[in-house]
Image (cartoon, rainbow, N blue to C red; front, top):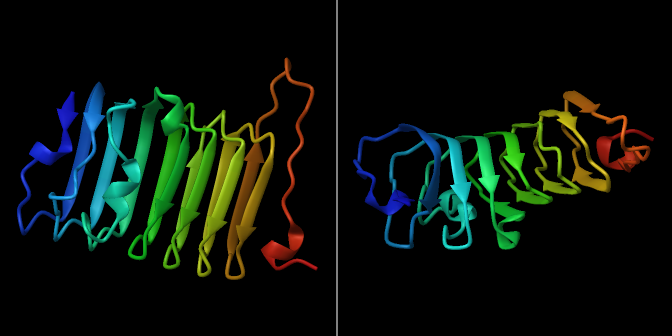
Length: 182
């Protein structure tokens, strides 16, 4: 298991890209602070029962200046990790792709401007609170339940759902009022 607690925490570290080759990871404890980190990419890792909380990375106590986060090919291997709750006041851009086994995402990010969720085939619920979001790309997902969003400032919206031949239900509810459409 790779522990993010053990990564160097330089006062000048602004960008971190971790390609972890499907390794199990433990997220930082409360004692780790990346004071100057603004750009973080995590790719090819496994989140298990003993990994800790992915949302910890977004808290101001851990990454007080984080503005850009990219999560790619993250395997959520434990039932407790299938529901992600991410809360941040500093994040401006979030990209999530190939989040294996992620069933629910609740994102509270008042300063988020761009969100891209791609190839998250098991996502059933998306709850989004991002009042100044300008760009939402929701592509190649098989959402079966509902998107609960409040998007008064969206200028660019792309929703591209996938339907597989073995699934004859392709239901989704997007409340048009939340998109500024009457």
